[in-house]
Each structure stands twice: as structure tokens, then as C-alpha cells.
Length: 347
Image (cartoon, rainbow, N blue to C red; front, side):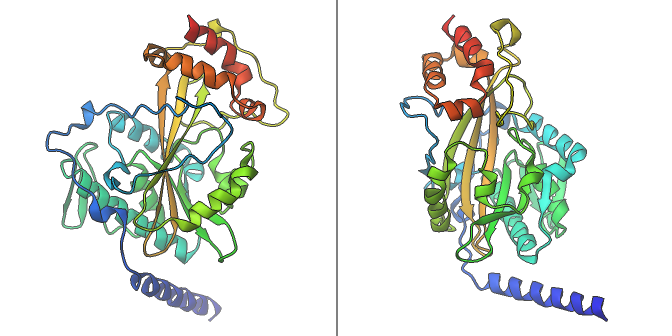
């Protein structure tokens, strides 16, 4: 009887939330997405060149947001890294599922994930009709030559599908009440940048950013921004770091309190294949039905050899390295790679 009662309550809550969300006006960024040009070829699309340090004089942490609502088609990108990175993401799912996939056992979280799934599907179909075809409820990905149901309802399967069809990681977040902070209620983290994703499950934004230097200075502005995002909005920001390995999936890219860092010499680093500028392209949207906040994260690795060959970029990066505040420099592990990298870029 007790189990039956719990089941009935769950069904009632599911119907309530579904009805509640269906009453809201369904306006999302996918409503104005234009398709790529008919000549678009994913194999020839070069990755974005993200160099957030260019022209900067102040390197304290900042939000640094840009409104790109007028170009919603710029949300989820397909570039020539697509197939390679999708294979890496599938490997992450297979080998680290508990670290990569997360869904909170909450009806709201599951409905928000399902809503996000539908928005992503509609985006891919609208933006890349050459590569994503819908027939009889099945979407066929012509790049990977794999298919999936647009009506998938199992949350774990939805997470796997999303992680196997877009390069962007994502966090789906809710506020538990008006005065609280947003919490991570669902996520796919195929390319963690120096942390264990599972530590952040069901945690607040402040908790997640606790290791980030000077976050308290940004907390108020960030919460205000999150509260004001509308469902038709698309915002973007970028960050950067340096890593002396080629791993997209890494738990150890940041300096931790009390950690001893070994200073590397130039000969210790392979600047062509083992030292990279790591960028994140972080986009923010709101889901119109559930009102959940979504952050998508696209990761880029650019070898230092390529950075050195870009005109004037080397000097800009050296200036950025030299002018990092001490706490952020420690967080980015400058002591390990800083002098060796500057010597290489100056050569």
C-alpha cells in the first residue's frame, strides 16, 4: 500500500509539472535559427580562434559576457573536430559514466532535461539539415552514421545521446526557491577542465566556484545575470588556461591550496604536441517551459606551436602570463609552465 501511494504521488506530480510547463509560452532560441549554407562542409570548418587575453590590461577574474541573441545559430557549433571529439566523448561515457552523466532524481530535473533534449534536436535539425535528418521519429546523424529517437524518455539515455551528438558539455540548473542560488540538477561533462564533475552534483553555483580566486567579487553580478536571462536570450563568455598535456578529460589542471608545483624547463615541454592553450566557450540560455538555466561549455585546445605562429599573439600571451594576479596565477599553475612557455614564445 505504501509503495502504491508513493507511485500515485509521483504520477500526480509528474502530470502537474507537465501541465504547468505546457501552459507557458514556448519561446526559445531555436525559433529563429537559420540553416547553414548549402555549401557548408563540416570537415572544412576551422575551430574558432578564441584569444580572450588579447588587448586586456586587467587580468582579475571577470564575467565578461556578450549578448549574441541576434545570432542564435551560433549556439551549437559543428567544426572539423566534430568526429574526433565525439569519439572521445563516447569513450568518456563508457569509462567514466558516473563522472560524466548526472540527473537528479527529481521530476523537475527530468522534465527540464527532456525539454533541453528537444531544443537541441530542433536546433540540429534546423541549423544542420544536411547532417541531421528526421524520419518517423528517428533522427539520423549522417556524420557519425548513427540514429536515435527524438521521443527518447529515459534520462540516462538522453544524456548519452546528447553527449554523443554535440561537442558541448552542459549544466542544467534550478533555484529551489526565489531566494536561493541555482543548483546543478543535470549535467554532461565529457571534458572536465581540472575537476571531478561528480563533486558538483546538486551543488550551488557558489560551491562550484569555491576554488576560483576572487569569486566572491563576482557572486552578486553573476547571480543577478542568471536571474535576468530570458528564454529568447543567448549569452556567451570565454576563459583560458594553459595545460602541459593533450587531455580534454582531466581532473588536475588547477593549483590547489598546499600543492607543491614542479617548475618545468623548456626542454621538459613538447610545445607542438604537449602544451596547449585551453579555452572554454560558455553559452547561457533559459528553457521556456521549465524555466531552468542551461550553461553549455565548448572546449578548445590549440597547440603552443600554432599560437606562436599566429602574428603578434605570442607577445599578447606573454603579457597576460606576466600580469596574472598572484592568486589566479597559482590557480592556473603558472609556476610550472610560465617561464618555459615565455622563453619558447620569445624565441
